[in-house]
View 1 (spheres, one colour):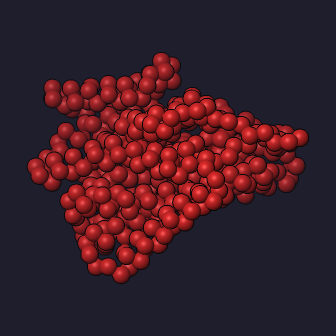
View 2 (spheres, one colour):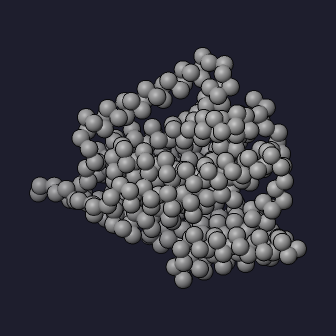
View 3 (cartoon, one colour):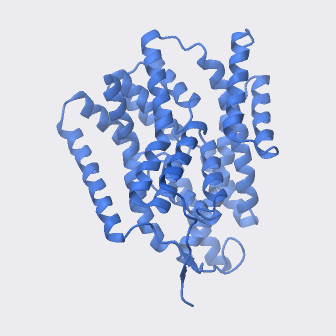
Length: 405
């Protein structure tokens, strides 16, 4: 039977970019995952399966996972130009917020109000991640094999095994189950999808764009090795972290600390901790903390250099991996690997919930924030923007009335 190309609903680039700007303005940490899924799947720009495949794919290469996923979806839908614009505007809100907070911090040095916001937002993120965990569990833990992979992944993370190794172990277990049972993770034969989706733009045009991006990648690397200029050092320092670190912001944070505090002495440990706090109370990718570091080192220009260095490698990797993945995604063994990864991701989400809960749910009121956000999102379907705005308002109200968390 001849394959038919499935067409996505038409959407203007302006609307598409604005949608990612709103996510960058309103979503925190792992809550970004739910916002992206709601946007892309809700508008039927990609199917749930395609977004889930993207979630599996972006865990195979370095960079912040949520930024990788946003870039993957935007590149799949709008090609290089649209993908670059969407990725830029996805980061822009958090960059501007951190830039302002950095100026405030280094000018006046007081962030007493950060503490209650930090506690409230972290607690609300726990509620959001629990909701995502339940969704993934319902979708991917269908039988004992899925549960074994999820449980194994959870235990490996519990013992501080690198997330990449966890993913590889999950894939190996999925392949073993396939060979032993001659079956896939859902108990049936893998069915090749009849529909395929071509990436926007001709392959030669996309290849040219990726080639130019690769030249920029190499130029940053060479500049960092050869130049002694402070901006070049800052750019290369953040570039190294973004180019080699796997996982979420929390797993990348030690490398960031090594560069900013230990190797270059750009920040004190207290300043670094405050920068991490800013990265968590502002929406968007957690690693926007790079902006804070850059501002401390070289002002506005430093903030631009550090932010670009942190996120550019992920953008470049995503373009390459998406091109390859789009051609091999229908292969049966890739499908088995995806099933294993999504089961593993469910177990990893459970670990995230427990880890966040240990540090976030330390006060009775923090439980109120966590449970409240979960109920509002799961049962009242309230937009995350309103949930977080409500939480921020309540937290600040408690602080200024002397009832700080």
